[in-house]
Image 1 (cartoon, helix red, strand yellow):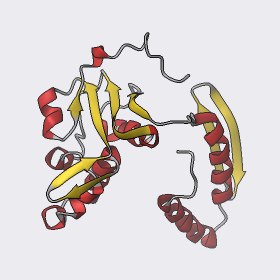
Image 2 (cartoon, helix red, strand yellow):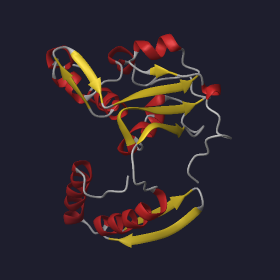
Image 3 (cartoon, rainbow, N blue to C red):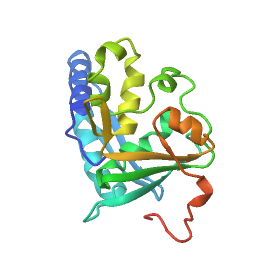
Length: 201
């Protein structure tokens, strides 16, 4: 999301060098936006990706000079559950103020994570929440823990109280009660008027 230098990317690139040591690999990295194809880079997997990431940073990332109290992220209809739709939260968390909200506007969405039922049991919490109670969560599927923390974003867990940097609000077919049970706030989808508040184009 505008950065190539991340721990996850370094891990992917390390794995890539192990493959390259055994056989030559050519990678094609495409830069696409809602406006179409902007570039194709090919060659070494690491260099191809990094070149594409530089262009994508200019094409697909909206830069602002401030943080916002409330971010509304529109969920594409191709994401029919929060497991995939959750990326709306971590793609916008850099521009929300401390104590603010990220609204996941998904009027069509009625499922949380049907292939990962443990998410319904653990809910959405920051990393500190889980590591601070590791005995309780140590046997939980790691991908469910990762998804939970990715959607919840940064926060702290001190003296039994979790404080998220910004609350996540789900505006979907999922009921207010269901949202509360998994530590998400609720907003009726129809309460958001995009004719008044236009998203970035």
